[in-house]
Length: 423
Image 1: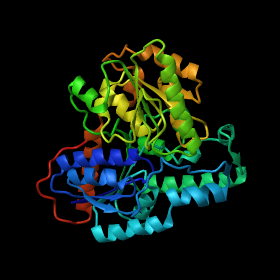
Image 2: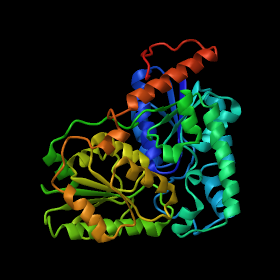
Image 3: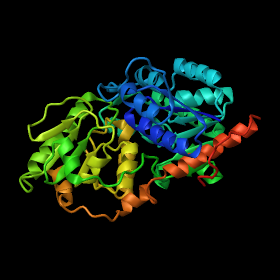
Image 4: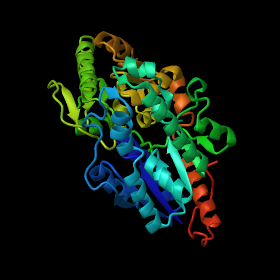
């Protein structure tokens, strides 16, 4: 049995979620041929997939990291948004042909796309069985209105965006309609999701909310060892994480500065408070801040943290919810339009979720969390991760879909598989 996985090449979270699923699939279907079509952060994730027993095909060639440059301009029209941003990054004809050529060579029983629209389109076009793993109920633009974009500082061409939304909605509808299975780690919120293709697929039984599709949660390591490896002392720890994709580089710098200033303010009350800044690249910071460019396995650090400050990237949301980490989500600006819906949803689910907070506002929300971490999950944690990790359930459903497609295609039954379902 052959399964090809194609994570979206935007941000590290899609790679991480796909890695978690491949590790669990390897356990469930040990003799399956697993291949990942990797399009970003290849030097970091290539070895991790190979260690998991997955064949890696680099579909980008050059190293790609969407966190280190701006991706949009302030003018949103068909040319600047669709032609210059969306088509290269998501709905890409050349990439679609590339994925299709790999499918022809690999002959998969199932393609698993992690919000990789070009990969999904290629499978749908060719009639290849495919599954969609998604934290989106529709394209981002379809779940954010013109007024919010304008509030984020964009100058928009409303007619161009109307046409863009209609076209994108049709693409997403076709992907969901033709998929064997849709898996989401984002809980349904009627005010935000009613009328979407994923909501309809949930009612039909094709789409399933699995909870977090994340790496194995490790047992608690020796605290002193973890802290020593990161250059931390015994005091309280605040972790500040920068998102994996940024629309405007100045917003990234703004959120970094907000973490640093909040840390300085909070040290007036907690002199031994330590800030670990995960900046995705080298950044200027005071000497009392530990700066890391990227930490592939941050779970031991999170288990030490009193509080995490993070952009509302959804894969991060699922990990911290499963780990029960006290978290304040910070959207640097409405200009980071791709995370506005997630920021809104998190607030509705009960997480502290701030947009462009002042130093005083951010510090006041964080202050009660320092030194008060408890083991019990909050209602917000339970809304996102009701049963902790959902990776086993998700991988079981994907294995079932691959088996069904394999049988339908008339291929010999795979040997050495681990029976069982994720349902």
